[in-house]
Image (cartoon, rainbow, N blue to C red; front, side, top):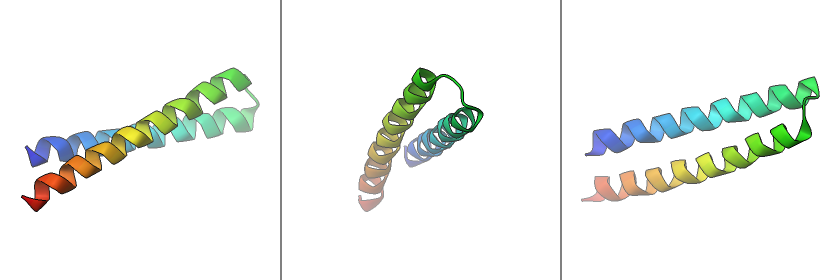
Length: 63
C-alpha cells in the first residue's frame, strides 16, 4: 500500500513540475494569458493533490 501511494506522490510531483514549466515557458514566449492562467490553476490543484498524498503516506508510515 505504501508503495502505491509513493508512486502516486511522485507522479503528482512530476505533473506539478511539468505544468509549472509549461506555464513558465508559455509566459516567457508571451502566449495566451488565459492559457497561462489555466496552467497555473492546474499547478495549484496538483500541488494540493501532492500534499494530500504526502499526508496519507506519512500517516501510513506511522502505523
